[in-house]
Length: 333
Image (cartoon, rainbow, N blue to C red):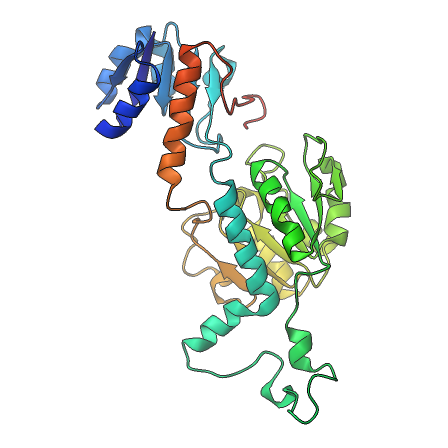
């Protein structure tokens, strides 16, 4: 049994992979030429397979992708091929969930605005200093300052996509006393934290009732361009959009138009149609928008998690056991 690794991995990772299946022959290909030569009799591959490599593969049965997203990995010949493709789905879920809750807390507590003011040494409470309650009166009367600082409690979080990331976000919701609803094409039994799990044709209903709309869906033909002006106009004017899924899901021109028209309250975005987001883009200058440069999945132990999936699947493949994270190539995830 033979496993081709391309691009090559470092010596430590190679050792860990070999230990998972000592009887398996490993080829750690440093160049395309080596990979082309060695893939002919390979049973499996870890790395980026191309149409040219696949055309030279005579007996390949399994390909381990190095990524979770499949939109840039799969191609027609690979989709049609009988080999199994597995991905890195799930290893980013908790880091992305942390990122999402960071966004939500910023948006309701104005932290993104205060950070900007700090850079200007500006003491300027949202709602106005003049509305701060005096010590004589206390907090017995709601002020503009109070009204400007919301809470997550008793709000509705709408998840567009209920895979590993969506489930991890939902799992944390009770700590903030959030209601959770979700839409997903695979409408499985929801977790206890989810009030409703609907098929994707119920997206308008989710948009109508959600205070936060969080996109965690993958890039598929069905999700590309899913959020246009009509979807923003269906959302509450007080609602916020969060996208940690794929940039192509949200049309940025329509999002800008909706923000300018105050059809939604704001947005927090980690992914974009074009990356890097051009420095001339109007989103950069909108105070009610938080932008992070596609870093939501980053975390300190990510490389170890990544290797753990490879090692586990190599061991499983060598023992003819079921593989982790099998991709449905027809739907691209």
